[in-house]
Image (cartoon, rainbow, N blue to C red; front, top):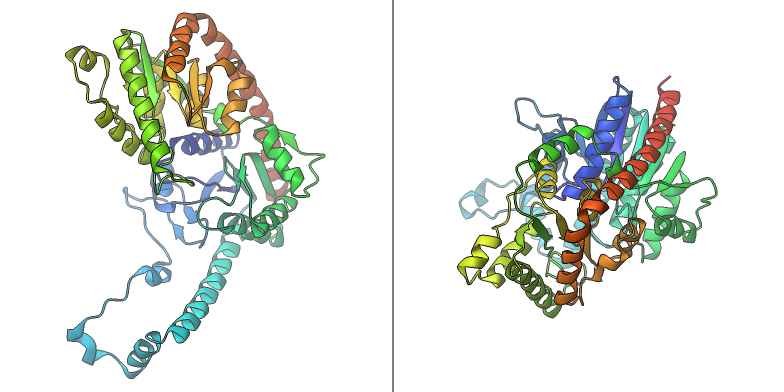
Length: 449
């Protein structure tokens, strides 16, 4: 049985990695004959980590499963357009007449635009051929994870179009399409909405992470009568990952609070950058860390994104300055986190987590860790409310450091009684996902025969 997992992940987002790790683990555990492939944003990174074939979500270009630790790029000739043309005076006389003619043509703006349009059309056709070739070998195309219904990133409606092209190719090949616990972020463009609607309508089964996501699908004109709301797939994480994290927690000593800064409103890392907001946020996070340290609480930093959150933490640490020896003893330098297990280990060693990432909240709750959420999105507000933590939710752009520090102290006092409740509710979500995975595999088995 061959299943292709279409997901918007790669490039170090550990929350998205938690989802896909959970999906791969659950499918493999339930169906030993299953062979997995990923369709993703960073096929080289994903092929290396998961040791399975991976395909680019936009172009369909493929990376083989790593052999001896090396990911082999195939269709390398298709990547030639990514190389910049370099003018080499020494080699100008070796150019053919055709090459010289093309060089002259490119210097004319109108001709250059025409050539670019021809190139885009050719690449689009090549991408379609690759996508159809990949999908034709599958028994199921599984769309999973957060941000599936979104046209905020990667250019206007580019992701919804890619989603539609893969779903259309699967439908044309008679391959079933499943949307599992998908999350909606934002659909603002007319084309983005149309592509998302048509992709959803091609599905054999659909479920959504929360009520907001299914409401968005309904607003697109999708008949959601038979659709389901099912928890985020990360709640089905492999028990082995959780067990390893709990073992790591046995080395914890003093009460500890973990803070997870993000690049809020930072240029190039936020969809609506704002220098003043970014500066105010960094200052507030730094003040929160020093306030807790001055109150005798041990503070550390954890990353939810292995790349961009590191930039945020570095700026916060510069802001703190760690002026006194007493603070230096109570505020740790950030922990190097490069994969999901190291993130889970870091969270397990804490008593209370302060975070702004949706999966930072979710993974902490799974481990029984009370959370203070500095929220930038209703999906975070809703998740906190599901675990009765509304009073520990604050707006990221306008939170009072004193109020947040007070909430942290309250959770530190009550975490002993809260923790079992959080774990119990997480376990109930896992049971719902168990039933969904069985349903997904029944669809795949029916196709594979």
